[in-house]
Structures are given as structure tokens and as C-alpha cells.
Image (cartoon, rainbow, N blue to C red; front, top):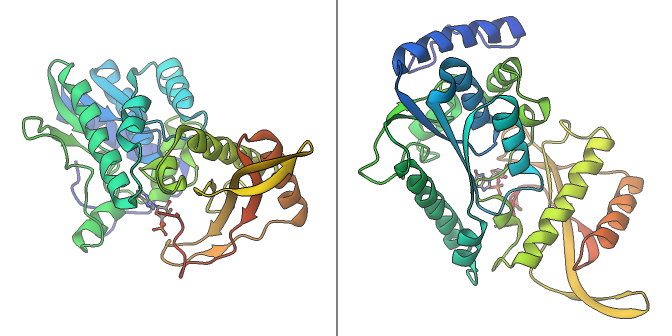
Length: 326
Ligand code: XMP
């Protein structure tokens, strides 16, 4: 298996090129793995999903996928992972609902970096616990992609995929999309039979909705983020904006304002909509929505999401504002 992207490698832009890459990888994977067992942390994101689909094809049930639900996933995400991988692709999938564990540990924690640390640390702990229950695992599969390698070499990003597992749990790595750029990973994923919605989805941060529920996460406010995000995604899909706008989501900050509903005073949270475009995420511009769509989103969110009495739109580019709120 190539460890580095060959300088003369042709960019995978067509189904034919993707198929050729898949064939080559399947052969290499079968040679590397033989009849041994492989473990994969399957988040449902593009990269790990493509790795899962590739390995299911290469080695079938010698792959075990572990999907940890940290309680900070978007609405319908764990269900989609189970549907696609367990029901359709017949993968050996361990699903762990660790929502309570994560939310209990996060209770009262307001510092953004501390929140990220808890989410990352707890994730590794849950994953390691599941791995220990399995016998004879020799390989760990990972959705490392070529930009991850370039960024870690340039010192921009710690290449944390590989790290983190306890000392006694070091496996040989299997990284079948390691030399691919993101657009190539998507085409390969499509050719492996993954749904377009999974392969072409917008970026979603590892700490999930946790960074969109600023300050100390509470279950009710988290639920308001999840429900408003689901409405936003639904409306973007209906209005042809899915796949066109780089990233869009909602944030529910931890402050309340007065309102009025059914003749009674309310004291509820605002919901902030953020929709941005970029090429490299270093600088972003704001996607301007039509007045009609904004009005419709406001109506849906205030009437369908408990705890929200106001909807705001974030018109701030990056810089100075980052994409996420924490
Ligand atoms: P910021 O907020 O830094 O976001 O302008 C830039 C891009 O990175 C994503 N992001 C993260 N992704 N873990 C991730 O995997 C994180 O902790 C994290 N923080 C931000 C963000 O969604 C955006 O696409």
C-alpha cells in the first residue's frame, strides 16, 4: 500500500478512476490483512464511512465497526449509520449509546477547551472499552486522508487520528484513503455504494453539537440545537441549497430574553442561524438567504422548537468570527 501520494498520481475525478483505485485497494487490503481482524471507529463522517465501505467489500465480517453515539450527533445520524452499515451493507456494527456518560461528564463545564478535552477523552475511553471486549483484533482502520498528512507535516494540525488509545492497545494501522484528497474520497465512496447524502455532506466537527451549545451543555438546550439544526437542514434540502452552501447550522446560546406566546410572557433562548461559504475555511463569507426563506425558517423554528422565542441570523464573516461559536 502506498504510504505517500505519488507525485504523478492522476486526480480521481471520474467513476472509472475511482473504480480502478477501489480495485487496487481491495487487493492491497486483502494482502495486508489476510484472515485477521480489523477494528474501525465509525463516526458516520465521510472519511470513516468510506473506509468502512471499502473494508466491508475487502474483508466482510472480519471488520468490526464501533459507532459511539456521544449524544452530540445531529438528529437521525446514529439511525442512518445503523441503517446503511448494519442493515444495508451487513457490516458487523457495534452501536454504543454513550449519551448519558458524555452528558454527565460535561454537566456544568463551561470552558470550550475543557469541553473538547472531555469529549475527546471520553470517546477514546468508550472506544477502548469496546475494543477490549473483542478477541483477536490486530488492525485499526482509520479515515486518514492526504490533507491530514500534509497538515500534520506542516505542523498545522496534530494528526490525532492515530493517537490517543492506551499504551496496551497499539494496533497496526489500515488507512485505505490515506493518499486521497477529500473530493476523491467522495467519488470513491459513491462508487462503493454509499448514499450521496452521506458522501457529500457538509463538514461536522468532532465535538458535534457540543460546540453549538455554548457554555455548560444542558439536555434541553442541546435538544433545541438538534431540533433547529434538523429544520434548517430540511429547509436547505428543500430549497436546493444542500451541497451548494459549504456549512450551515444553528447555535442556541445560554441566555434568555422575554417574549410572548398565546397571550403569556415567555422567557426563552434565541436560536442563531449560521450559513457560510469558503474554500479553505481560513476565510469565510456569509451565504445570504432570501427573505422568504428566512421568514419561513423563523416561523418553523419558533413554532416547532421548545424553548426558542427568537431567531437571529449571523452575518459575520471570518475573520473576525470563527465558523463555530466555541
Ligand atoms: P472554525 O470555528 O475554527 O472552524 O472557524 C473551521 C472548520 O473546522 C470545523 N471545526 C472543527 N472540526 N473538531 C473538528 O473536527 C473541532 O474541534 C472543530 N472546531 C471547528 C468547523 O466546523 C469548520 O468547518
